Image 1 (cartoon, one colour):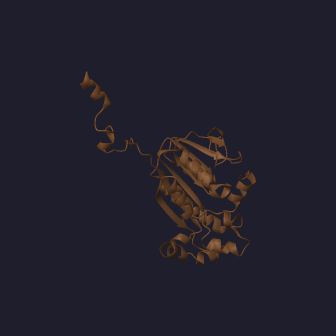
Image 2 (cartoon, helix red, strand yellow; image 1 turned 135 degrees about the vertical axis):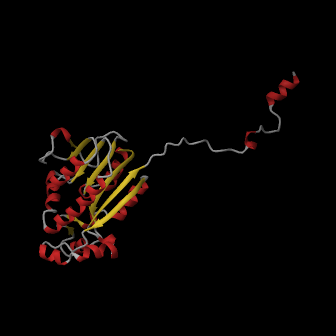
Length: 254
């Protein structure tokens, strides 16, 4: 389980020039997607920085809850905070209309369990927005030669790729509605150098879209309302062996 210190390190990993670029791209997708989503119950977990809080407050959902592992975030009313682990959400099954989990997968020891928890708490037709760091990217390649940690904080081998996450969601019966990658530049901390590689964003979207340093996925939970019917059986299987029913035979004898 990620501690409060590790959560602080997660936020600090996005403080550099490349981290700010990555987070800005990510939040632009979240903002555009939230404009088409609503519901009654909304849950936010993972990164809860000030821009994320503002996005949540502007969302169309009625009730908004932030899941934190420690009450160390300013700007959030304590009445809207639940202290819990993201892979053990303290909500009833089928009760959440919209769940936003930004970089939560890389904070949990068992990402699969976290995805199963997401599927459990989502209401029928509910949606989830998940984001993460992509090990198959220039940032991941950079991590191989700089200690094996992407963005200098998280082991590369523990990162969940977009392809793997989508496979888990599909296996749980969730439909992938949207999926995007971003931050195709190398993870440089110099703003001038990042500016020189700005052309890689548009080029990467067309040429190698799967290799962005970050990704974001939106999925929807579908539950069938159809009542299963008993399998049809051949009419001959309902006949009594021997060709004549015993009860009918006794009636005739009387």
